[in-house]
Length: 242
Image 1 (cartoon, rainbow, N blue to C red):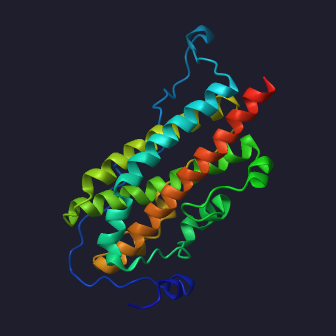
Image 2 (cartoon, helix red, strand yellow):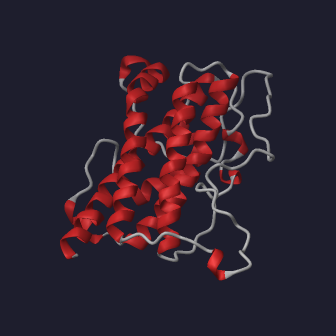
């Protein structure tokens, strides 16, 4: 197999080997990562109709930690089995492969899977920055996970149900982030499917598809680790100062 890093740097893409061109994407499909809490977007006629429960910082951080941990536990249950199916027992993790549209997520997380976040780094984190950057990062990962689920269904993948559940777990984490940013009046722009280049959407070659899917899944799990540790730190700090 040719070096995927070289392909990525040169702007090229793996060539599809078959003739199957199912509609992997449909613009009519709702983007589950946008407004994950399904908060009504219409403006009420009376101010009294607006009711948003006010949460303390401790509650915000605790809820994010709880949902991130649930998503992490669910993903970890099948991570090794999926990795082994993709690459055999050789242990190839491809830790240095990050596609361009996910590279900024990896740079913000700035750690490898299984590596704890250093205490000095935790002490330097700012709540608003992490809320905003991780919400955007999780939305990007949701774009990737959507494609993984679709391809698992189309190609009869053995992990379809696991990835389908991972999509919902991610949506719950995103919902907690959405609530937190509304509480703190943090503005953001939503991510759309267009961030994922079409060359990485339609992959008929199983080897390239495995590499893409594993890279997305590894970054997803690593990001959940970072979020759990970061907001555990914010949670502890808020309790110590309350």
